Image 1 (cartoon, one colour):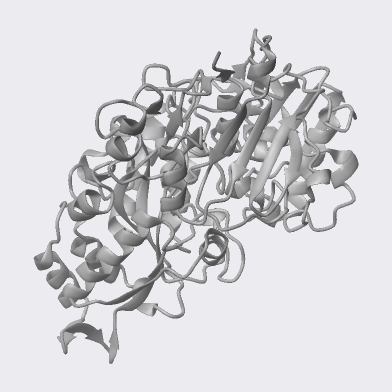
Image 2: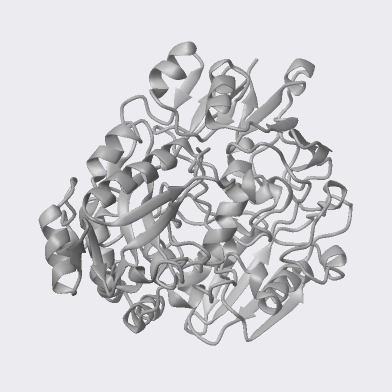
Length: 572
């Protein structure tokens, strides 16, 4: 499967750090131009993002179930203000529709300068009015605010290329959410009454991006160059997204040279893919584990589940963590591409090593800890009856949901069922989901448990995705984050403390508190350090990011795909 670790679904912290208050760029346009031969122009870049049996014609960038979100193709059409390289958290934001920015008034006022001369793909001029309209739309339609953009107190547009946003509290820590927001054309979207759920046909997908939709079918979607793109003519002239129903079908197509770019977990990737054409088939790095760790894969536990009330018991959640054999899953289901999580604090290692609290260092055992399971549950009033832990006549019963087309996650889910039931839990797995129905179940809170990748590009973001109660919603409503429906005043205070931190020492103290809360309350169970999946072929195109040149995180995510594709050149 591919894992979408797009920076979305939650208000995020600026990767540039607390001390940086402004960003400008001497190179104000994406690197795209250059002449190519007629033969090169004819080459189509083929991208497979995740196994899906068919596509639905919907290009709404605010809908997490639309084509663009599912295939990480949104920014080919709609663009953000800034881009961010999650592989290099100390790298400054990359100017895009935004040319520069400055924080003032105690980080409560953000002034952004926009690129001049930008046009929408229908020929209308892009301006600060479009940016102001987009953020106003998000504020009026919370369900559309999937980035968790903070609310403004006022927005002004001094001129066509300047926008000033005022906030009630310091928001520099949430600059990624602001900068990553894709901007919409006011002249078209102002008439859309339900922006979060509106179905946008291919012909109406109007953006500032380098491509427009060329042809749509349920089995293949193609994009062609936007002739008026402000960044210059892309060297990749056409992009194709074919539909593959299963991971195995996609792997077969990739290995036979039919796909140029994907982000899937492939069993025995060296033999299955690289060895088929060693000169052209490549991974991010040549040595194991081949993929950089980019997130913490966790078992989300719905603290408000009506079908699994036992999950509201913190002792049960701790016992679930102790019962898991992480090493076995890493070896058997993830073929050692992903390492077992070693910290209960929720951070991703080794990339968050500098933020790791000593109290949560190496405190998770790689294998099942049966003694801890027994002591935790016994102390909480549970007792064994018929081989199952019971209290008040009820077992610890819950269902883990993960699509069976996600071959590694489904393997993990089945392994967890065996491990947990062997320790006296009452667990089942349900794989009868496609991505959309699974995502809807999780974001709406209509699930018990689910193995899910983490989100964010910094230590704070990764913790905020699980712990920030301001991003959750009541069961039945769509949450932007905190899908486990966890609420904690201590976590809320620590999030605010980080966002309002006066310096690095305050940030560290807040991060340590968040790790302690994660460890003490276990709203979700850290299981693995998720790989940033990425396989590519250089047979048709060159210029790919690698461990030697990590100019962007190439794992499937919408903004990065645009940035990556604009760096490619057809092979001669």
